[in-house]
Amino acid sequence: MKNLRRPELPYSLVWGALIPLLACGLQWVLWPHVPPLVWLFFYPAVFFSAWLGGLYAGLLATILSVGLAAFFFVEPRLSWVVADSRHLVSFAIFTSMGVLFSRIHQKLFDLAGEIERIQASDLEAKRDRLEFALDAADAGLWDWDLKSNRVLWSDSIWRL
Image (cartoon, rainbow, N blue to C red; front, side, top):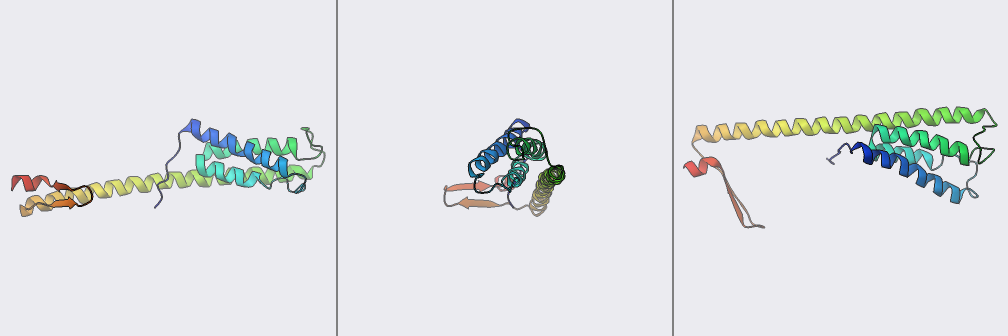
């Protein structure tokens, strides 16, 4: 299983800001070829920001994407005025999807951390049981790593 770690907050906010700005730049360059598709690159930008940075990165990416899309790609362009009220519906849908992406990815980060914690405690319990069994049997274990030519001995081997 891939190790999902929650990124530190400043780094997650960098992802949350950088990816939507890159999406805006790419959409600006391609706008003559895809003009009616306002949200074409912003949905993936929010998704990947949330995937890389978690909740706060996804929410920042959502807010930034709505602002960039409204200013650069909604008519009248290069203005904060929204002439057609139908765009407000698309803003609401996009915002709710961005919040949903962000919450789901944060939940995945939290669950991955919980799984990691459970696996670590399970490994610790198995290690304790093995030590108990070796002590009870008055036995020991050794291992030889051929690649590094290292030999590892359990504590009970030394006593024997």
